[in-house]
Structures are given as C-alpha cells and as structure tokens.
Length: 186
Image (tube, rainbow, N blue to C red; front, side, top):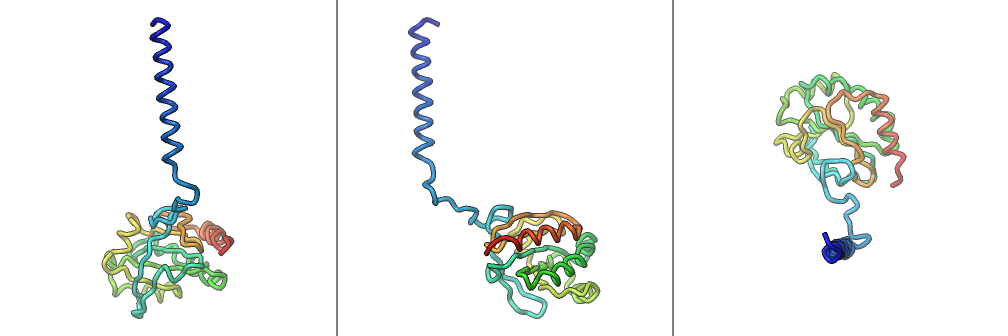
C-alpha cells in the first residue's frame, strides 16, 4: 500500500470512528429519562408486574396495594414436595417479620392444583399469610413461572430484588433475604 492509499485508509477509519462516537453521543438517553427498573418484568431489577387475585374467602388482593412493604411472592401447589418443605419456614418468617413490614403472598397455582386440597394443606401447616388463587394461571404466566415453587423477593418500592426458582428455600437463606428487603428504606 502506498502513502496515498494508507493516508486515505487512515482518514476514512478516523471519519467512521468520529461518526460512530457522534451517533453514540447524540442518541444517548437524557439523564433521568431511563425507567430505572420501572418497566414491569418478572426479573430482578424490574418492577413486579401488577396483579389482583382472590383469597380463599373471596376477598380481592392487589400487589400494588402493598407498596411500602417488603413482599415475598411465592408461587406454589399442594402436590409440590419442595413447596411443602418450605412452607413451615415461610410461616415462621412471616410471624417474625410481618410487624416490620413483611407480606407474603402465597400464590397457589390453582390451575395446576386441586382446590379441595387447599384447606387441609393450610390447616396442616398452620398458614396465616394470604393464600391467593391463580385459578386461570394468569399470574403464573405473567411471572413466567416454569417451575414450582418460584419466589420473587420484592422491595418496598415494588422492584424485584431476587428470583428463586425451585426449592425448598433454606430458612437461614430465606431469613437473610427478608432481612435485606426490610433494611431498605421506604
């Protein structure tokens, strides 16, 4: 390559680089214009998708009404061995931390479960946190649950901090996750 060709090649490369940097600079999002995680998506760092489900006694419960609380959304079924194994720890954690702002929403994947099994299950495990009925599987689909149990740890601001697929969750790890959520400011 002679000097003129080398010069033209270097000049075109520099021009392309300058144009690319200019494009990056001018097409960037203005400060404060990003969503800061406020787009609903069932993954860590994003706003927990809103839903409203019925409880066993027919009351409606909406996730959005719990803003300001730390929330554990646990999607489960009565026939699921890991779900059964983690319920006692979830109940103990709920009793210990509900006065500090913890809410547990046990979303029963009723579309995959038997409604008749719920009352005996609740009595057997002494559950006092809300049991929500996902009768059509809407929340299971909305949260892209592929395995039971699946748990979503949601901060007071409504942002999902962590997703745990499968189980059972160990009580010590469950406690640590909940304490981290509760430490966050309002």
